[in-house]
Length: 275
Image (tube, rainbow, N blue to C red; front, top):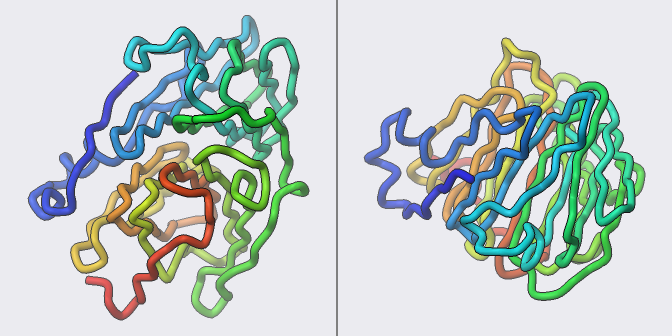
């Protein structure tokens, strides 16, 4: 398990490109033979990824960093298939087939979790600490709560699919969904916002290898950018905005952990105030 320590907004103006990427960008997250994990001290989020090929399932083990007997002993998790083929997640002997963009919530106390795939299944995991157990639940795009935002003339027409939140799949503190941009749109989450009580992570996917997303971060008056490739994640501290634009069509998984699960708990950052 890799570790990312918490940072303050005062540090960002002194970071060059290499330092920004080292603190906030997560690359190489989907190996075939193990679950790669990253622990963030911002709200103690853990993200992980695996692209299991044909053969034995890949097990979600508890890294030494967690000081736990098993990964979900004191945690909950959301799993999203960001690949192009179905795959199977087995939770304590029960199999769940995840088609692309399907989400599986796994509650605290699940002891054995494995991932299997025979094509381009790629499982992305986001985990937060949990104080109670909620039922393990599978949902497809048709089961989510869709919200249409933006418009074509501002290049940000998009559909937000809310899966894990206070009016959907119940959790302790995890909030998670998938956003799809309409053809011809490139901006996500604009106007931007912050939410001081929750850390958010973006995982971009669906990008061709030669294309990128330019992700904006930092305080609204001290913005910086990260150039992000397919299946790479950005850790966004509570004080940072999180938005971006792509050179081609894409989707992304947004996931939050913190003080509450209210999707609308945000502080807007109007476009004309950004610097």
